[in-house]
Structure formats: C-alpha cells, structure tokens
Image 1 (tube, rainbow, N blue to C red):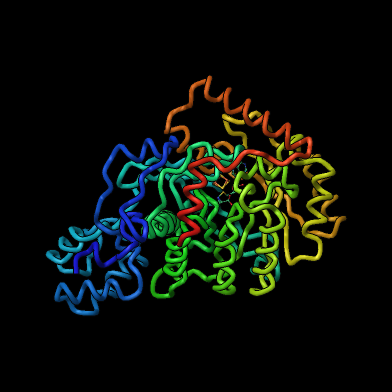
Image 2 (cartoon, helix red, strand yellow; image 1 turned 30 degrees about the horizontal axis):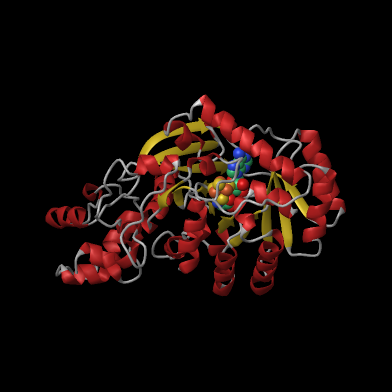
Length: 441
Ligand code: SAH
Ligand code: SF4
C-alpha cells in the first residue's frame, strides 16, 4: 500500500469523490494557490489500523506502531530524526512516506502578561491558520493546598484555512475560504501546543474548535481529529473537554447529536431575531434561528449536555433591550447557557464592542428572563485576538477603498435588519458551494 492509499480520503483535503478542492476566490484562497501541497499524508492523522497496515506492507514488526505513536503523542516529535527509538534507515523511510508534522510555526504573539499565546502556522502549500493557547491559573481554595478550580490550559484550534460563512464582524470571514484542513493539520495544532506546554511541565486540558473555519462544514475531518484526541493511546483528552462551535449548520448538528454525548456543542448565535442574524451570520438565510435552536435543543435532550450559545456584543447593533428579551424568550427553559463576548475590533467593520455597562445590563436582563449568562473576558486583544486577524494581516491589508466598500455594505444590510426586515439576499456563491459540499457528506 502506498502512503497515499493508507489515508484514503483523508489525504490532502481531497473531496470524497474527487481531487483536492479548488481554492475559492477569497483572500485566503489566493494565498493557498501559490504553492503545491505536500502529497505525503500527515502521520498523526492516520486512522485506526492504518499505521499497522502500512507497517505490515513495509515488513516491519507490529510493535513499531506503539513506538511511533509514543514518539508522536508523548514526545510530540516534529521530525523523523526525533523518532529516536526507531532504527535510522527506517526513520528515513518513514520521513519519505509521511509528514511527521504538517504545520510549521510562523509567528507567536504573547498577550495578557503571558496568559494568551497566539500562533500563526503555515501549511505545506503556504496556507495560514491560527491557534490560540490560553492559560487559566488555579483559583480559590477548596481545602489545604487544594484549589477550588484547577489550573487549565485551553487550546482554540482551526478547522479550515479561512471561512466561507463570512460573518461581517469576523476577521476569518473577511478572508473567505481557502480550504478544509486535513485531519493531521487539525491534530498537529494540538501537538504543537502540547510541545510548548511540556517545556513548563504543564498539560493541555481543553480543546475548543473556535479558531478559523466552520467545523461543521469540514465535519468528517473534525470527527476524525476528535477521535484521535480522545484515544487514550494517542492524545487521551477527555471527550468532555472538547467544544465544537458552529455558526448553525443544522445537518451537522444533527450528525453530532446522533453520535451521543461526545463533546460540548456551542452555537454562535449573536442575534435571536432572524433579520439581524441574516446579517451577522449569513448562514442564517439557509438555516434560520428557530431551526438552529430546535436542532441544538434536540442535541441537549439526547445527550443530556448543556448547549453554550456564543453572543458577540456589538454596540448599537445586537445589544438592545429588545435583543435581550428576544434572546431570553428564545432560550428560556432550555438546557442552555449564554456567553456574552465583547466584540474584538477588526479592521473592515464599522462596529465597536458594546461598552461594559451595556454588556452588564444586557446580561442582567437575559438572566431576569430566566436564562443563565456569563460575561466572557476578551483574551489577547493586544495579540490580534479575533481569530483570523494575524492571517488577515499577512494576507495584506485590503485597500482603503475595499474596506470602505465592505463597511458601506455592512451598514446598508444592517439598516434593513435593524428596521426588522429579513435579508432578501441569497447566500453568496462561495458559501452556497461550501454548504453544498458540507451537506453532501
Ligand atoms: N465558525 C465557528 C467556529 C469558529 S468562530 C463559529 O462561528 O462558531 C469562533 C467564535 O469566535 C465564534 O463564536 C465567533 O463568533 C467568535 N468571533 C469571531 N469574530 C469575533 C470578534 N471580532 N470578536 C469576538 N468574537 C469573535
Ligand atoms: Fe466563519 Fe465562525 Fe468567523 Fe463566522 S464567526 S466567519 S462562521 S469563523
């Protein structure tokens, strides 16, 4: 079996029935098309039994699989030379057949006095993705020497280079879709963070799919990645320590529900009223609020697990009393919790974060309406915290005319929404295509 065969449709982002997808015309896509993708599969993305099959075909003993897994997941090996337990000629053969690491560190920015580390990685074809490592020190005292809340290290990872959904407050959305990540490119972000953490003797405790991309439009690979992260022989992360966040891909939510209580589902809601959500999350024109919440409610019922609703607070846009009441009305009685996140400023929007008083009043009103709410601190503002910001900077600042044009379009669309009318615009062609591919799987 050739190494390419060993991974089947995991290889290089190929669609199940065809060649690797063409990058879109987004800015992320333009960057992607510059270099050729490395055809060697990523070693860390191999599925159950695939490594064993390849070893057998190479005439290698079965115990090599454990040696390789230990090197990948205990030592976080980055190069074939790091696999020290293997004989040198076999190390070289492994390096010919597979990429030991599929992502390379491009830039690291540290913020919040060292509590947030944001990494820009480049992939074999030059595509850029981001991951953010957040440290939460132990807090409170439960007894002598026993903290109430243990130290946590959470990694926010990307599932795609860019994103087709195009939420107007999001730096990744502004980039457009480059391409889906391969399974190995997803899990290698975790190995990279584990490598950084091991230097201080710490371990990763949580992984959240809240970086670049819409995970439910690359769901097959996201699920393969989650299986690898949960496998005790590999990363061994407790399934309860994984959050998958979606802008509302209803068929994807239903697929997750069918899998049972594997992870926490987060819904990026941002508005409880369709006219406004049509603008803030363009996918709402395909799956409106009621359908998204119905699917999430079903997920909570089947899995017994509380759903998180993310709500980015944008001054004068979605932070009014009417919005708070609509949100409370929508979620009252559900196994649900709302996280309010002040918007991180991004270059191409005319919008600002709601001020802290307004966020507090909004939270109190939703709470009075019977729904649990937490106000989230904004991590890493000085490191370009909104995911996609570093990659957007690298893609080159759009010209002043392009930024002005985008801002004018956002203002025009949101005026209709703020008057209460639903968008008459259909899905942009890129998003329509991405949804078609995602739903077909
Ligand atoms: N595409 C998925 C997951 C990645 S986005 C989704 O939308 O759920 C992860 C989170 O970052 C989302 O809740 C998104 O709304 C939020 N986000 C994006 N841009 C932001 C900004 N400028 N300020 C604050 N949060 C932002
Ligand atoms: Fe895509 Fe999520 Fe950004 Fe919206 S918020 S553009 S869905 S990454």
